[in-house]
Image (cartoon, rainbow, N blue to C red; front, side, top):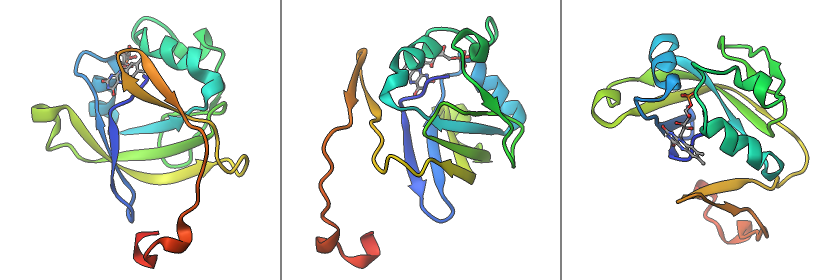
Length: 149
Ligand SMILES: Cc1cc2nc3c(=O)[nH]c(=O)nc-3n(C[C@H](O)[C@H](O)[C@H](O)COP(=O)(O)O)c2cc1C
């Protein structure tokens, strides 16, 4: 599924909070398997990102329909998407907010990240069918307190 509503909840261990609507096929799959892979696409995949969000895994094999390549993960049963810049293998570590908020809390148990480009052109969902495409990068590293880096 395509997901725009997510946030980091911790760095070490790396935690990720995801809002997943209960009508999604992914919702029940995640409750059952307690694991997933979160794939980070780049802007060249925008049609695929929207297409995947417009159909249900119960009706269609999305890897086949969108010409994506699955690769075996190392720590979870769900496959990685080869075409994505980064893939995060995740385990559900806290299910206590699912019933109330549809909020799944995952721990990243293995990360796969391409080494180039350093700053991939990613898309960020703003809502109402609009994406923001990542642009210029400005480094303020020297001004940062070390603990915040
Ligand atoms: C750009 C975009 C962002 C989306 N973000 C979310 C999200 O954060 N949470 C969610 O539950 N559904 C989100 N959706 C909707 C799901 O991707 C959609 O319902 C999809 O059909 C679910 O697939 P599934 O039934 O195979 O799980 C989003 C869709 C799009 C196009």
